[in-house]
Length: 148
Image (cartoon, rainbow, N blue to C red; front, side):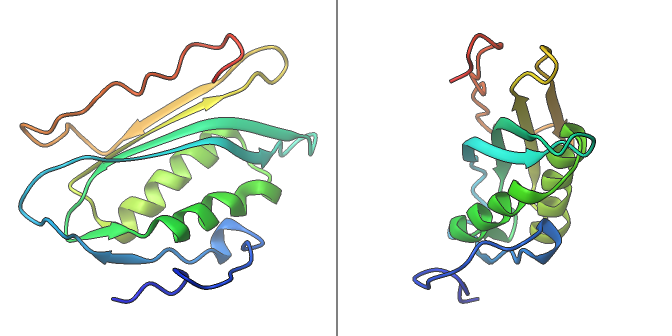
């Protein structure tokens, strides 16, 4: 598997369903380990008002046969910039697409959304219990007080 986007000038996909995720073979199969991606400047649009929404997204996963190539993940996450969806749909949708395509041993996502109407909304989802013996550090995103 050769990544399609790595080393190439690539435009941002117009929508999440148009984004292509690249996967490469796990370099350490049979050795459970955790991969963490943090996107502190994730944006999407409110489906009601069209106003921008902002989140700090943390994705943790234990690879199976493949790992997601980081540039393709960055482009996928960026494709939400003009996508209108509720926080819950964005957060869980990201995780479910990764699980469906990558088939990790385990995955969890934390969507720490900045306030809308004065109320921050945090959305959490995971596939199951983490594999036995896997070190899973805390996500350490503070409760809302200016997040960051």
